[in-house]
Amino acid sequence: MAESDFEGMPFRRTVGDFLATLELSGVMADSEVRALRKGVGRGEDQEAVARRLIEEGCLTEFQAGRLLLGKATGLVFNRYVLLERVGVGAMGRVYKARHRLMDRVVALKVVAPARATSSNAVNRFFREMKIVGMLDHPNVVRAFDADQYEGSPFIVMEYLEGEDLEKALRARGILPPDEVVGYMAQAAWGLAHAHEKGIIHRDIKPTNLFLTTSGFVRVLDLGLGAFVGVSNAKTAPLDTDEGFVVGTTDYMSPEQLGGEAMDARTDQFSLGCAMYRLLTGKYAFPGPTKMDRMLMRISQPHVPITEIRTDLSLPLVRILDKLLALKADDRFESTTEVAEALESLLPSADRPSSRRALATTVEKRPRGRVAIHSAPEAPLDWSRIESALRRDQGPGPEAEPTPTFSPAPQPAPANRAAARAAEIDREEDGLSTHRDYRKEVIELKRAMADGSKAAARDAEQAGESWLERLGEHIGDFLAEPSVSHIIYIVIGITLILAAGLALAVG
Image 1 (cartoon, rainbow, N blue to C red):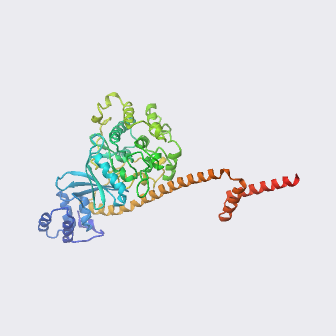
Image 2: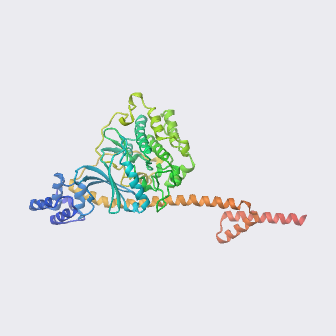
Image 3: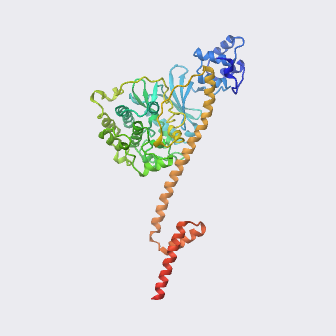
């Protein structure tokens, strides 16, 4: 790479500065850094050193980018050296990491400290992780470790190669029905296994369904439901210190959105929403804003999928309609029934011989080598930003395209690393999207509560005389005039005058 490639960069530090930052970071052993100091060539600058270390496999582009910016922290977390940051969202961050002692490459998900302020949520997380650690199913991502470090709970999972289903949708467009049915059957078997152990996911969406290069669908993020304000048992979900429901707007069940008691059937609804999107590229409950879509799923049924796709079989449509029932009692009795119903739609030759030997039900396609939780646009249910939230900033979901992407020309390693590090810093601004989302959900819940209070007040006032209510409306009108008050008062005065006239004539 030419020297001019770095012109205009917001940093011009010396090789000594770079090596000092490297030593402080803990990414390389002190002895390795000392040897590196001796091996620096005459006239070699920090970018050249970083480039050489990337090419030799001593540093990743992520690490080199931060070091070139003079950032020594944030590259080591507890027993893990962070290799890449592959996702960021409201819940926290996901890294490709390497265990210092075992040298095993894993996916490390670190929950943001702000999400762990509730002691109830943290305790629930550890209770659930004891169960998650015992889960053993080909359609559930394996968890190796979980703990809390410097105020941040974290979970260590196997590192997968492939892509999440949202990314598959965006790259290829709407997927063939048999392919979607096969993927959803696998996801349902994985969820059924978790449900049998007492774990409810609470945030099923395409970004949490990962398609490996070997054709298996793995359910991600089991156990992290402890931080979305709900518990395992069928209890009210607002039991965190914040009393706030978090999920992904376009996949949340009505009971989850409304703050009601929920059970494993909430995952069925979310699975139905994911299935609908993979089959159509659209949301089952469309609307121009998140608030519109949230209100729709509380009060109205989903848009019939037959209005979008006419090639789907009637049994498939019936299964989807049952998954998307607004009342939990109208859904399947168990997620095992969901898996069996979906499998019954597949050709007999493609049905798995057992739950534990599930493979993909369609011809395998070449796929890139992508980290677990790789982001579609981002998504985090752990992507850079929740994909549903980022999509809301563009056209409404009913007009949302499903584009394909072409790879852009790749810059040289050190230059790309520095640019990526700067980009990661800018991504932090995306978390404001989540804050807006929180505000909208809180406003919705407040509106729902206000509506309940208003209904109660109406019931109490049902026995009052209309003259008393007229007096109240007059008082309200004097305090804050409105058209409805004026109409009510005019009608009331007209009735009074009519009654007085009738008495006078009589």
